[in-house]
Length: 204
Image 1 (cartoon, helix red, strand yellow):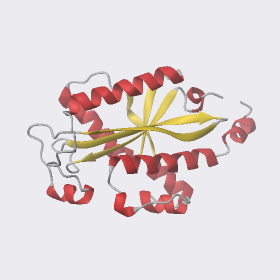
Image 2 (cartoon, rainbow, N blue to C red; image 1 turned 90 degrees about the vertical axis):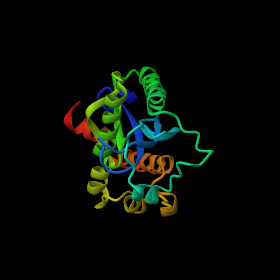
Image 3 (tube, rainbow, N blue to C red; image 1 turned 135 degrees about the vertical axis):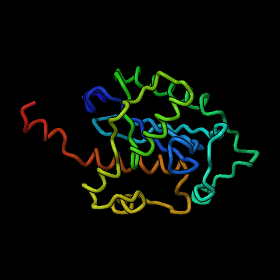
C-alpha cells in the first residue's frame, strides 16, 4: 500500500501555529511549523521539519498573555521573521511539492486541536489573498480527538506521556517542538491501528 492509498488520496502534513491570541480574525500568526511524514513498510515515521517566524500583520492585535505562554520575543534580533504572505507561500510550495511526490491530490492537516490551527490558517489566506491553499478547507486529522479515543486524554503533554513519548513542558508552546511531538503521537496512534487486519475483515 502506498501513502496516497492510506489516507484516501490525502497527504497528511503535521502543522502547529503559534499566534498572538485566540481570535483568528484579529490576532496574528507568529510562528508556523510543518512536518512531513515518511512511509515505509506501511508505517508512518517522522520526517523533515520546516518552520517560519512570522511578523504580525499591520493592525493585528497581540494579547500579551499569549506571549507569556509562548515565550515569543517579537523584538529578538535573531528571530528572522518574515511577512505572513511570504511565509505561507513558502509553506504551501513545500506542501504542494510533497503532494506531487506522493501522488496525493490534496493535503490534510494533522494538528492537535486542529480546528484552531485550521481556522487561523484559513483566515490568514483570506487576509493575504492567497487562493491556492493546498489543505482541505474543513477536514482535518485532529490528534486531540484521536488521543481521547486511544489514551483517554486530550491534552498533548498527557497524551504523549500515556503513549510513552517524552514531553518537556518547558519547551511546549513552541511551534517546532509541538509539531514534532504531535507527529510522534500521530504516528504512534496510526501505526498501532490494525489497519491491514481491518481491511482483510472487510474483504477489501
